[in-house]
Image (tube, rainbow, N blue to C red):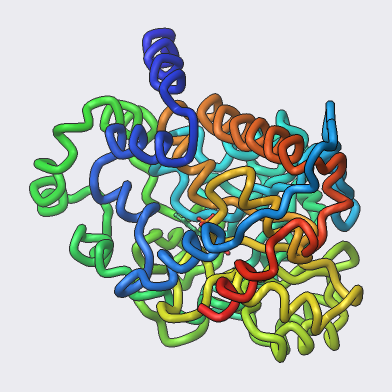
Length: 402
Ligand SMILES: Cc1cc2nc3c(=O)[nH]c(=O)nc-3n(C[C@H](O)[C@H](O)[C@H](O)COP(=O)(O)O)c2cc1C
């Protein structure tokens, strides 16, 4: 373990930004796991748009203003955040590193931010809730209303503060890399799978060692009591298309509103009409998100539709954004266009791959450092002051038209 963490420290020393973390993760992970995290749906048009959308926005600094210590803190629907970031719900993280969801939640807590636990976690939601810190729970339907309701009742009992309903995953997106890599098969350890996967795993002995010591966890333990045969679903089973939606319907969301007292947040909003429907149902927040380009390819970048959605809902709900955040400056651009906070998915996943929980802490602190420096260069002393005047008009028009 000591050797692992000494190696991890050395690896982290070379990680200055998202691209470094991704490159280092690529060296750690078997190709199938790397592609599962990195990839998007079909031609990855939306995946690329997400990143490009931020690059097309240009800052307009308010020059000659000395800012010593910009204030990044905020209150988000009852969460006290030291910076306006949450770690996004991401399935399959225990395949990336045995620390998995627990490591991400612990690093988020140490950074003074909040974690959103996915239904598709590698640990049970009760185990994740035991990690100290502020957490929301993200509910999937897993093809059955009873399954979803049971998960939500458990999340309430476990003490999650907010409930997130993801509406863009009726079926899993068409991620062709996953199909090529064998994620369309049942991943359980049987002889044929061992022969198929072994050549790809052999070049990643550290990952194989950790994965085997962890008991080769391919399943979704939250689903253990929810399936017909009582066995937990496999992650790969979710990726294959089902007969019923994995996402809650608007009726399900109305049920959630009636049965969940804390903040209710809808994830996967990309249109003003869905945003208005969510408001009518009495939700507290919406997450403008295209699932990191992993679901419907061809939809716009989240950042491109953010301004119109913010305008449509006004102050009726709290708007959060995810998809495409790679740097602290991206966070500030999203805030300038009206988001109150952002979520990051792949960024902590790469940190996790590089050195478990310590790696997640590293990428979160790097992002904080980037935000502080950018705020100082902008001449902006508090994130509460960010508005469209910090972005050049010309670049905004270009990004939104994309
Ligand atoms: C490997 C992986 C697994 C994901 N699993 C889930 C999930 O279980 N539930 C969910 O609502 N979103 C899931 N997402 C989407 C993220 O919550 C988030 O919307 C997305 O990663 C944001 O884009 P970014 O990766 O560019 O930051 C997943 C994303 C990744 C990369």
